[in-house]
Amino acid sequence: MAPPVAFPSYTEALDYELELGFVLRAPLRNATPREVLDAIGAFVVVNDFSARDVQRAEMVTGLGPQKAKHFCSSMSEVAVTAGEVLPVAERLTGSVSINGTTVSMVSSAGPQWSIGDMLAHASRDETLYAGELFAAGTLPGGSGMETGHWLRPGDHLVLTIDGIGEVSHQIVP
Image 1 (cartoon, rainbow, N blue to C red):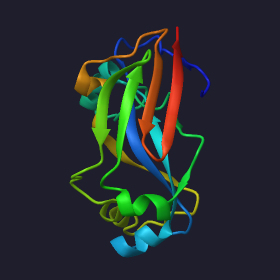
Image 2: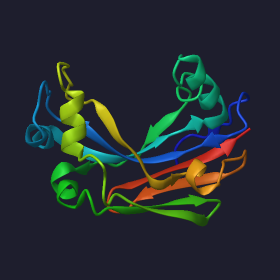
Image 3: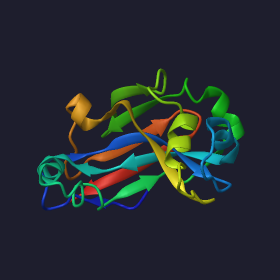
Image 4: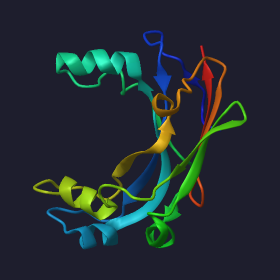
């Protein structure tokens, strides 16, 4: 289990985001979607914690999500090779569990943009370096905002992507 996560004092809406993450093994710049896929080294599970009530207020100011997003994120301890994941990247399944109860099942099926498209866009006129971590965005059903399952102090959260791994956190006051 990852270290405990302190529930920020400034939020009443602590959320999680179950995301498919990937790490580059080679640099990219102005890459095509095919070149991007060749540069991915491994996949991980990413959790992007969010203070949703703070995020709404910050977005209105034009500051962007600062305190709402920058206090904690995590990734699985295990990384799975790109060769194992890329052939099934759009058929992955997973789950969200809070206090031992599965509250949501997720799937990577039917993305609006492919991993290759996303990273090709990110590399346009910008160098992406080996070792950089990217996340593909929250899998449908992979956040409390979507399912109504907000985190509270004392909760034990487990986010899983089958065949890749999991992130597990104890939420503390």
